[in-house]
Length: 252
Image: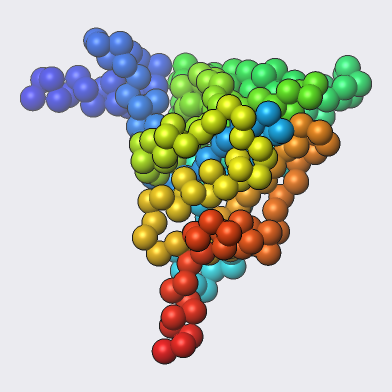
């Protein structure tokens, strides 16, 4: 009973380490990320791909109201997994930092610089009483001086740089697919295909164009571009990933 009471005390206090050096509230925030739908990032020599599973919970919900990928600056995109409200706060913070950098230095912010600004902000909420950690992970991808960069942020405030990574639900399965199929010489189109294949790898029904978001930042243009549903559908169809359930119901 005494051990349970002690653990409850560590649970309640974000600023209190447990005897084995753990911050339970940060670990619970990571669990919140695992409950969010997946987002995937792929870095290729031609640019960065961000893809997000945004399947809606109800056919009555407008698919356009589910936002998983955001433009942070002309050359930076951010995908999220976890609490959407927390993600919006961090994305607004990232946008402000991007604009401050442009006004102060007259140049676009670096991808690593922005990531560390965001993770420093996240980290503050792991050591301040009366606040809770952000229950969200972000993928920050973009192009810096012609070089594609892809970072993941963690609820603890730790940044990681990746060639390809998944956050959110089914991370293990998605990461395994990425590790098996990633190549250093992927084209941007092949990066899009790999990201969509990873998302579809955990679904038996296939993927609908309005159930996934895809955005790219090309190394050539250094511009964030979101793919339309028609463009996503063409990639899904070309790789035999397109959902056919609706068509079958229509025929019946």
